[in-house]
Length: 129
Image (tube, rainbow, N blue to C red):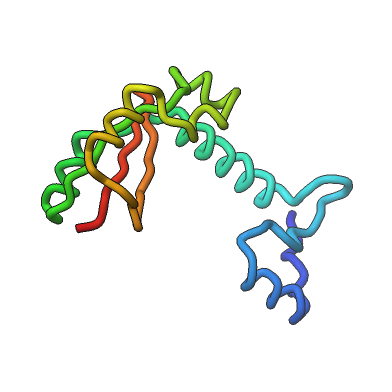
């Protein structure tokens, strides 16, 4: 038999509205209530799956083309997802071929860049028109 959770205090309810953090979950002995623990476990599994999910570069490029935006595909210095997870700084630096590609594209300044990553270490920078 389970007892219903105690109603939240107004200040705790307000705090929950202001943050996506898991605050005021309650407790069951020395642990979290089962619902909160299962919710966290599911969210954690989904986050792990998202990190390793394949990315559809051609689908994104086609969608952008429909909006009249031509993407510039570039690669980072992280040669694999494993490298990126161990060295995220390499994922923020273009490799030499991509650097030359950006320099030769004539894009002096990019006021808006949408950067995405996928399994094949590609990113896309979309210059605004």
